[in-house]
Image (cartoon, rainbow, N blue to C red; front, top):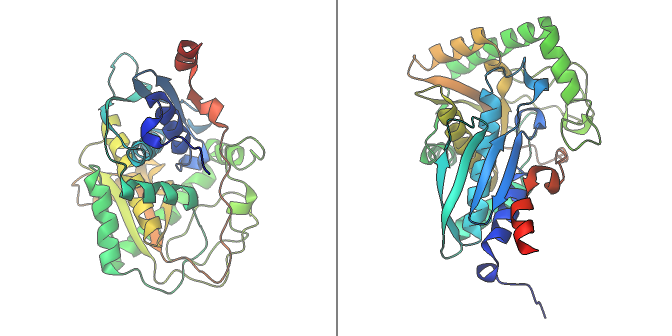
Length: 336
């Protein structure tokens, strides 16, 4: 007989600690995991870590903030799955720019079955850089993914065939720029040589050779060990994550929207791969903005498709131990 404590009978601080730990499953730029959580007796705070090894890739912390937004949405969903509703203050203190969000004013509710399914998706979600299969993603499925992003205050624009050709040219140009920038190459080398540290991109998740794709993926500077198969990505769909403003609050919400879209895609059997290289240089980012007809600011491009089921996908990227990203000292002291 199980003696597990029902979720509704667990202390709030236990639920907050578990939600912060679950949020560690979120994807992030170069798997840098640039977030730190503080569990308080009646709140959960999210802070951004300024990574010096991302200074060239992400000088304005746009991608880091986006990554933290992914973790924020993961935590909110994990809390909903345990029957906790929270109010979220984004950028609550102008004097602490690294403090991105505070979750508080918790109320117990019925456990959310949809949130529970999304938590399961967090555990199986992965970034599969292999070419997708020739199976097309149904329009209704794409609509659901776009709506999931929009429900969190982000915008996801799917591209037509002519725009995909333009995106391919932008990605190729971004690769040339990156190859000519020593700082970008050094940072990429750093994040692809962190085996055993809990962060970074191990060789098992990187293609053993450049995939034959319409839009070229990132050149990581050296081959990985992931077999890519013979596919070409003809059935892939590409999109741009964007919003009407280009401020930290918008980047954070865009990350929340990306999390919702990615988890929805996972639930619907769709593979999503972010293409962040195209926004890491000013010139290519401006070209993407022109593709949006100047309506807003691009934060990320992405590829959507049905993964090749004939071959095993990549393993999950490593994660930092919970104790390194979740500070429970404030509630631990109170328990003594």
